[in-house]
Amino acid sequence: MKKKCILGIDFDGVIVEDILLMMKVLKEKFPERYDSIDIQSLPSLLLHPEFLGHRQDFLRDSRYISDLSFCPGALAAVPLLRKFCHQMHMISGRWTYQEEPMEQFFKKWGISGHIDSKLLRDAKSKETALEAKLRNAQKAGVTHMIENDPLIAQAFEKAGMKVAFIVGLGKEKVSDTPNLRKYPQLWYFAMDVGLAGSVEKVFAQYVI
Image (tube, one colour):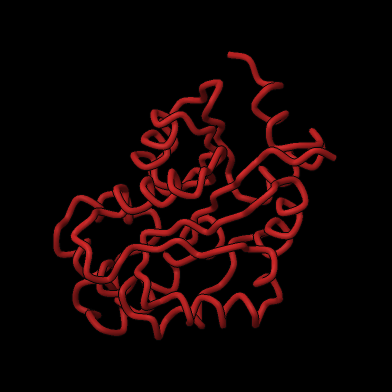
């Protein structure tokens, strides 16, 4: 099988389910603010600066990485996808000082060898997650990206990459295009790739 694909894959919301652990942490730290909040309330919380600040604090804390759980099917999806690409790079808006905890997490679950590199945001940089991820992806020559943030997914598409968009909370309004395909979970995309025989064919077989 000829491999032409250089695949980028996001971390939070694609490989790991960070939201449930984050809400558990926030409910313990700020019970008066978050005890009554459920998953269905999260889309509206994304509009509040206070919540966004608490989310950034959670994501910056490396101690929580070891307690993250995988998204359904992701543990099997990563090695399956690796068979159909020349390289696989994890491209995340997390920071460079978290690379070692991430590596230990991947080693614990036996998927470290499937990920060629972890491309992260410099801890001293003032770049946004979008800027850092796009720069790292372009530097690595990524041809296809798996992403769950709608703005970042659309930025990758605009930059000429083909995107598998993993639908998250309140993000269903993003439309399919020839270069952007929606999936409920990473595993569904991996199965589509396996059935098609390549990442490229997944996009080629869909004509809008």
